Every structure is written in structure tokens, then in C-alpha cells.
Length: 210
Image (cartoon, rainbow, N blue to C red; front, side, top):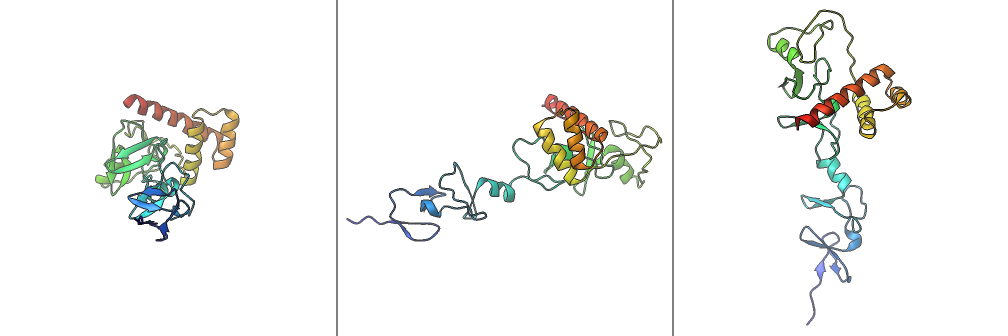
């Protein structure tokens, strides 16, 4: 009795090979199982992903369907520290007031307005119809304390990406590494050092909060 051959889900041809692959309830020639985006072969990969009958490698699936930071819109990996606000997810370094750029600490009060994160001080000014002066300073709890002029540092998405990538490698870089990171980002060494100090403090609070 002749055995009916399976058909390959990719090319549609019968599979007469001794070995074939079963993925998502379908059969594949080993050489036909490829990522639909980058076309890399998947027959020797430990895993692959299917969405709407399309097959993806892990990298392309994460790039297209994985979680993305609501601020910088870049992908969030499993090793990244994140902050959540309702259904929004942020890199730890990206969770900052949209108006003043100050990064918010774990446990600090904040508000969401049209998916924009605001510290408490700027939220209150917004709902009360006021405007924020560049001379106003906020303490760690988001309240105004004085009218002394203070220059705030704001970071571009590219700078935050470099800072966060280096933070994942070494959260407490030495002076030489700080100078290198400052040179890459275009920031001063002092600003770079303070960013790392603040990020370490936020990470510590985040760990303790859990």
C-alpha cells in the first residue's frame, strides 16, 4: 500500500525526505523552513515563532511584535529594567516627566495625560492652567521648593540608548569609562556621572520595592 506523502507548507511539494520538520501543525522540508523577514534558515534553530501563518526567527519576531518602550519606541528585552504605567511600558531611563525631562523614581507620584508622563508638580500646573517656568526647581517628590534658577539636563533618545546600554554592562563605571561614554554621547563627564548615580539609586529602589 502506497503511503501518501505530506506536502511542505512552504513550497507545496510532497516531502519524500527521511527527516522533515513539524511546526505549527504543518510539515516543512528542512531547507524550506525560513524566517519570512530575513530568510535565515530555521531548521537548526532551537525555536521559531508563527503569527498569522508566517514564520519568524526570534530576533525578527521580537522586533515586530515584542514589547516596545512607550517613550523611545525601541524594543524591550527580557534583561531590561522597566517601569509600567497602566498599559504602557518604559525603559527605566525613559520613565521621565514629558515636560521637564526629570526621571521619576520608584514610588514617586506621577500622572498620565494623553499617554504623556508628568511629574506631580507639572501635572498640577497643567490641570490648574498654569505654566512651568524654567526657573522653577522640583525636589525629589515633585514639589516646588524655590525659585532659584537651575539648569536641567534633557537627554535625546540616542543619548539614553547609549547610557542605558552601558548601564546594562557596568552600572558603576570608572573615570575612564565615564569619559568614554561622555565623549560618545556628547555630554559632560559630570552629567554622565550623575546619570549613572541616579540610575543606580532608582534600580536599588526598584529592587527593594519588589
